[in-house]
Image 1 (cartoon, one colour):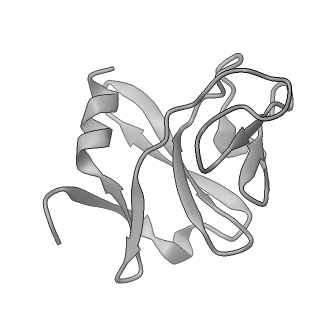
Image 2 (spheres, helix red, strand yellow; image 1 turned 90 degrees about the vertical axis):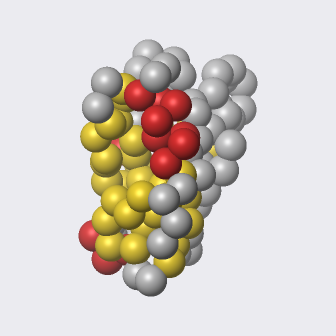
Length: 113
């Protein structure tokens, strides 16, 4: 595997419709979402509204509701949906060999943020 990607967990570690988290030294943790449709997404684990832990929200298709104030955030873009405004950074992710891989440069950029 290329040094450009880092394995963070097996695909079976996160149940469909749920999320897990990955700590990042010196930065906000990353939330990994596994949709009921089988897709995986990674976002910084902070709602753009009040910093709520998105990993604790409810996943609806390709969005998640923040557990604090119910803002809906797109898992594809990190953008707040509906009337709300704001964006949570996304982290490039790929699935290979039964593992969830995150873009190393994006993780390092979060550590420097």
